[in-house]
Length: 171
Image (tube, rainbow, N blue to C red):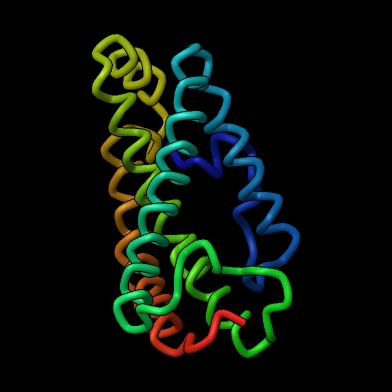
């Protein structure tokens, strides 16, 4: 069954992308998919996914900073983003920190999902909840996150590493 039809979403007529109706349809479909989440195992997903995301983000940032420190050995992590930073230094340092954010989020969510999936009881319960809701199973979720990760992580790392190369002063 089509998600839009199941949730009673308007599927007739041509609309421009980004219209309020399209956003409302997306919200209704998301609410319909969320109705399946009844298991307490879903509460474990939140801290594991966000914890894995934050750990991944921090690890990627430390990797970017290690690259930066290899180019500028006089720069130390303790001096990063100190008070009085100039705009010329803030922009590349901001890119070092936040360009990797979307890729780290996708990778962290994949890791969090995988950690919960390793628990047999949770896996069985969450797989049962996903039946009848297209695109919400473990495999589909991981494939979707992988697609996002394959786009955002390499480009984010390229931006962050380029910024790390050009950040010649921490002031």
